[in-house]
Length: 375
Image 1: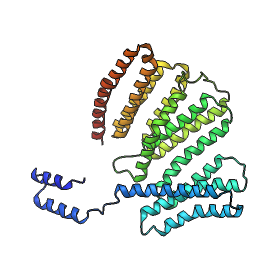
Image 2: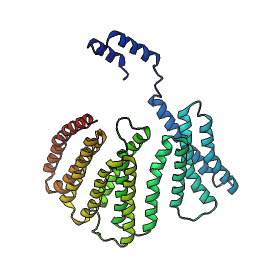
Image 3: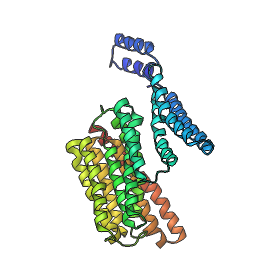
Image 4: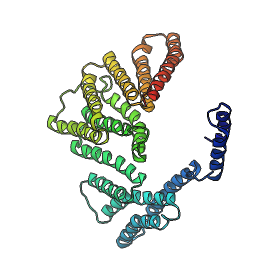
């Protein structure tokens, strides 16, 4: 807290601490002011600077690529991949934050280096293998450096590789079941990331996965909702290549569950329930749709809230509340609004936002308090 001195006076006046203890705390905080860690402007500057540096280098290479010989191109690729890592190693003892940013840019440049090397030697191979090689390189960076940006790249590139493999496997066959498999796998993977934190003393990499899962869950849920909606897709419960889709569903469900077992141990049982919910959604959407589908989404949102209360995680309560509100809003727009007149629909929409928003926020605060008390 920035105003720690004011709180210290308040606690001393209330008799919670004595004057000697208050003086010791004040002397300690004064002596160690500014040494607890980096401030957020420095972190933002480092992250933004690393992003701009990597983007500028790649744009410079792209602008002069045609003027370079094949030998010069390959040498430039090697310099891009190795140069940032060497620079990060040289400044590691002086400024660890800058070193981490340079190492992350070097791993990001590895992906560009793999693509450029394939172009230099005119390699026409299985293109998802390039993403796999990039993910392996990021994994090696995490194993050696133990830096969070390396793990973040692994957490992004591994699902991206699986999605790209699925795209190649289905080829030109485009049907709703294709999107359902991908969306279901991404939603379950996001849930595994979101629930990686185990208690208030969890490590930094678990909190990073939690943030990544929370950011990815809502967009993935929207895609899954459209993919499973009978109103947007035709009914195709039996796809054209059932064996291929059986393999796809096995991977989409099995790998996130395996990750959940590694991260959560016995608590991975709830991930199994989430997988059952997802598979049921993929079947129910084309078969029933309508109110049944909205009710199933509301049940999933309530389940996420209950999960958060059980584990004492407020972020799951908040995400569940957002999903529930989105479900109610989608139901109103698709099933109710078109049956009312212009004025009636606007009045209903206003009441939905005012009364429904008030009730939802009141309930969310009460449930979040229960989640905090469960810690």
